[in-house]
Every structure is written in structure tokens, then in C-alpha cells.
Length: 281
Image (tube, rainbow, N blue to C red):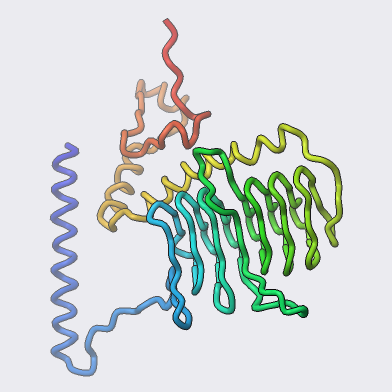
């Protein structure tokens, strides 16, 4: 039945393709009413002046993100949906294994009042395997600052020009870190303006690299999904509808046992809590 369904789907796909080709031909024959395809002006990677982004082949950049100008993104890093990394008047460097999460903004300053050049630097030679990570939470703003290895920037935090967040330091969610502030290793700062709150516990420091593996695996899942062709996406919609689970009580009344097809199962290391339990003997 699956083979027949696939064959019917393929025939339908090619009928639609043929119809669209005939429609385009007819539009061209009509002269001024020729077919025009709408083009989105959004570009995930965009040059500015003579600078072009350099993104490692193993990094994940979401399709709605924008990486512009003199920006480098290292191996295993991920730039999530809605992010903007704009390296126009200076450079941005993102190390390996780094997460720039949804709707975050990373920008630079050409120089400050004293003439100091202010690029934005997030990590250097960082890898997930060595359990090092810089983390920028959702909707964070990083401007002309430096975030060292294994540092944490919380959701909605703002780091202004000249800020340095040292290794194993944490900026709390919603914090505003003023210009030229240095946050020492092992401390958490928060508030507006940000100030020292307390020392980080060992568990909190260990949390940062632990999150690296989860986000690295999750980025791979998103990258694979975004790379799927249209026909595969549509076919999976059919599969999901066919194998949609109903209420367990409803299924038991019908004597139905529903199994998720292998194509729709996420890897265990992405959602470890969802891994199927081994049957007890």
C-alpha cells in the first residue's frame, strides 16, 4: 500500500509540474503578461563592501538568520532563527561550538571615544568535544564586546561596547552591562545596570558545557530538516497524517497499536528523555 501511495504521489507531482510549465509557456506567448516569479530579497549570507562571511561547513545557520560582512563562524556553531550578525564597520568572530540563539543581535563598533577598535569576539578555537561553549541566549544584544570560552549570556541581556565576559562567567537574563565592564570568571552579574550578584556554583558552571552537546545535536536536526526538498516535505506530511496518534483509550477500544515510522523518529541523543524503554523480562 505504501508503494502504491508513493507512486500516486509521484504521478500527481509530475502532473502539477507539467501544468506549471504549460502555464509559464502560455504567459510568455501572451507578451506583456509573461510569468514572473516573486523573489525574496532576504539573504542568509550577504557581502558588504569587499567583505564576505566565512561559515564553516559544519555550522548551522537558520534560513531566517542574516550574517553580513566580515563575520567568521566556526565549526559546530549554530546561528538560530531571526539572528542578525552584522560585521560592516568591524569584524565578528564566533568560535566553534557556539550557540547564537533566536532573535539575537551581534554588531560591532568601529572605535570608541579613545580610538580603541571594537570588534565583537565570541570565543576562540572552541569545540564541543572538549566541552567548551559560549552561549548567547534568545534576544541577546552583543555590541563591540568580548565573550570568552564557557561564558553564558542570558536571554534579553545587552552587552555594550568594550564589555569583557571572562571564562565561566554568567550574565543574567535581562541584564544591561555598561561600557568597558569586565565580568570576572566564576561570577554572575545581573540587573540594570548590571552588578555583581554572587559566585557561581560548581553545578552552574557544569551546566554551560552540558548544554553544548544538546544544542549541537539539535542544530543537526534543524539543518537536516531545512535541507529537505519540497517533495520529501510533502510526503512526510502524508506520513504524519497517516500515523497521527489518537487518544490511548480510543486506540484500545479499537484494538489498534500505532507505531511511529522510522523516518519520523528523532535521534536518542536529541531527546534522551523520550528514548523507548527496554521491555522488562
